Every structure is written in C-alpha cells, then in structure tokens.
Image 1 (tube, rainbow, N blue to C red):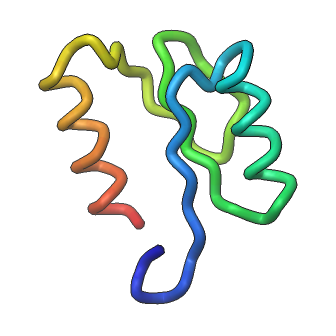
Image 2: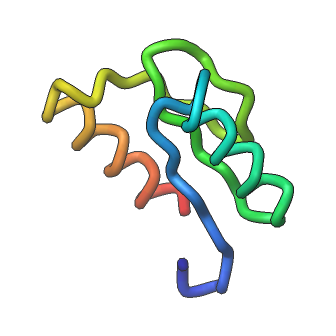
Length: 68
C-alpha cells in the first residue's frame, strides 16, 4: 500500500488462467491491478515481462514503485 492508501495488486501471469482470475478478482475488489505477463492482459496497468528474466522483473518493479 502506498503512502496515500492506494491499494495496488501486482499479478504475474495475468493474461490467462489463475493469474487472469486473480487479476479480475482484485480489480472487482477496487484494487488498482497491475498485470505482468508475456502477453497483454486486460488490467488497469500492463507491463510486458518474462518473469524468468531477473532484469526484466527489476525494471517492472522499478516502474511500479515510481508510479505508485
């Protein structure tokens, strides 16, 4: 949670399966949902990322922290 009290969920694999279901649930609960996936998920904010690549993950988290 940020200093403003904004609730943010980062969901990996958000374009399909369990990740997509989790993203949809968090979004329905009023959280800003950030989808991280190799494909483009339907979330509030989307970052394309392959979680097997540590540098790619670090870039995503830096962008999330800078924005939220």
